[in-house]
Image (cartoon, rainbow, N blue to C red; front, side):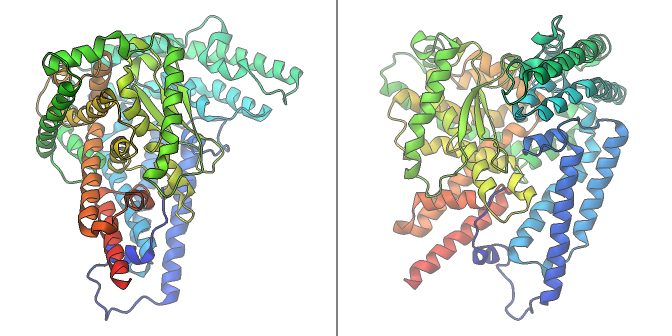
Length: 597
């Protein structure tokens, strides 16, 4: 995803014990190996775009905007076979004949591809929708599309006409999941019927799929606009709505009754191995569920002690639980209207921007904006999220904020949240990656969750270095967000590996965090639906923070936080062990340069 790495540092990173007497591969062999490697990368990148038009749109590639992914069992089998062949093709390339930079590319691709193949055994495609999204919210892809010319609208109409086939394929996968005993928890699936009903409109112009036609570019002649609008209304009324009506009937009558009462991933077929795999996949470590649970408990205790200090600082009379309730309920901590909340988020971003030079030398060129989360998914989704810009720079990044029920969206969380989701968190991470010039596309767009979300949580703490936590309630917000990620380690492993109930997880969260009950319930349900993903944040942040302290200790007065932060983003998204090796090589290079001077 990103780059600008010293080849010398990479050589130290990946060949620390290389004997001096070993001869380098002949130039011709190096050239052949590199050509084969990059040919494989290019072919796999193109395959990924072709097989997933939604991903192509996400990447800013417009070639497949008239279709959906083929979700038939036959197509899935072909994709899995192609993944296995791609790994075999990689293994046929002589890694030793590659440059240090390409060995990093090789190892990163191998890490991803090996796990993609391992993952096939768990047949995740048998659960194709979740309570936070799926085919029932397919209209959301419009957020990624330009709708700048008539062809964009014709492509969208083609997608509308193709939607019934996608719904049929999705229902077939769900039915296969029922037969295999691979079904999601009922407590989550009970939210989905309302989402499907949101697609059942009498007036096609009120469909979420019609939204792009409400305001069309003036460059499209009025007569052509009228034709396109009529075609869209016809597709929605004649195909989209009837297909969703049938899908809703299937969901409520044939699928929901078979959803499971249990919540643990370990209750699925091959469930224990599945959760172990997910813990390793998301954290990019070998930590066990038990080890992660223990780290979480330790962090919860540490952060609680810091919260007590803030409570005392503001002079609150009452224990920490009473302070949490005060933070959740006092009207002064909330905006009354969604528009006010959006304006405050936009102002928060403008406050952060000029302080970034205190902690970075390299500022990405790609801009970002602030948008509300779409109304149809806001009640069931998180407080905020980031949507990366297109890798070719044709679409800015966007920080999406939840305006649903502003009375449960406290002001004190906004600073930490904005630092994480926008700058210098995910926007810096993705934009820097897109702007690193020489990486293969899969590296520029890869996303290792422990690195990515670890950086986002680390970015929240950079607010102290930027002087942004002068208000003690904002500091409480930072601690609340750090506690949120520490609690995740406990409740995710608790529910999926230690037999915790959903209510136990909610209670533990509420006991240790001032986040509102609305947020807590949504978060717990997210961890149930997305096992293991929530483990990555705190594990990643702890590793990055430890590397910062190691660099500060080793470099002494020569340590500069701006250089360290740039160095962390310079690798692109990589497994944590790769980041550790890179930073230690960077430290060694700095030490050597200092001795030379």
